[in-house]
Length: 414
Image 1 (cartoon, rainbow, N blue to C red):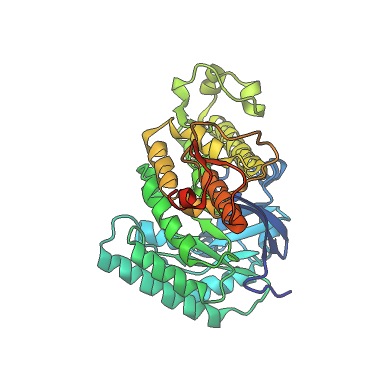
Image 2: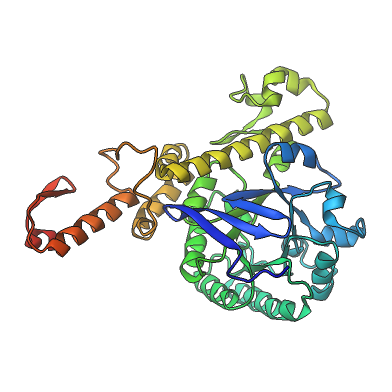
């Protein structure tokens, strides 16, 4: 089985720049937008069977940790007890955290091929959020050199290869890295180094990085955002065109006794009544959950948290399908200042979003009068102008932004 670089992704529906699509792998299809739950076999709170039951057909785990621990010698699907799609990261995050990894590019690529992964990431050098320009430039150069080397080291044609985009907050470096990787045979492009920005609620910076990638990447390549896993911000990233995510947030929050909702996280000690009706929240009260021992409490919290992420991805897909993603974003924008700044970023880039705006949403009965900033209105105005200009002599009156337009002269002024 051989996968052409530009032949694995079929786009079925647009809303803003969000895409419902199908990614083909040797273990089946993944529908985008999609979030990969991160699996750590030594500290896994939610079983792969439970993840499958929640609809997660694809999982991601760290190939470097598996390589270092020497835990696996055969098929990764058997090892994880998962017959769906398996993606493996390369160990780049460990470089960011510890400064280096004890494995070469050749070893990481060979190991991923040996364990039969479906989607593999080359060994990159993350930029991070604290790097100066010189360090960021160096990380981009190292990553691009690794990308070139990786092509020569591959021996299998049935694995989807991911090209990690580095550069961090330096958008000119992100642009160059995206363009260079786009010219190489990588099936998926992945934006690296967002985690620290996300932890600081600097969503606007991450959106700037995504926007730079989208302007310079071919539309045929799915875009992956490493390490983004809070449901409050996910629809904003999807609206700008991110197709894939991965996150261990559901487990990390659970270890810290934090309870995830679609808008924020709560300390378990601060919850009076569970706002959710998943299996965990139906069975336990907050007081009962707090009374459990640490291991059971964390396991149940992780199960609830991953349910919330699964539910959020379903809500996002439904909004794309019905053309109401902007409404979903707008409903979240006023809940936190960082979300509002993210919303303002999308408003400021509404002309870009309007190129993909879906005007025939099945669930839409009209646009709210006060939604004058929404990208769909730009698309509507463009269509009206094109129709009136094609007819030359205007026989009907159009209304744009509440003003009557009855002549070509007036139209050109709008």
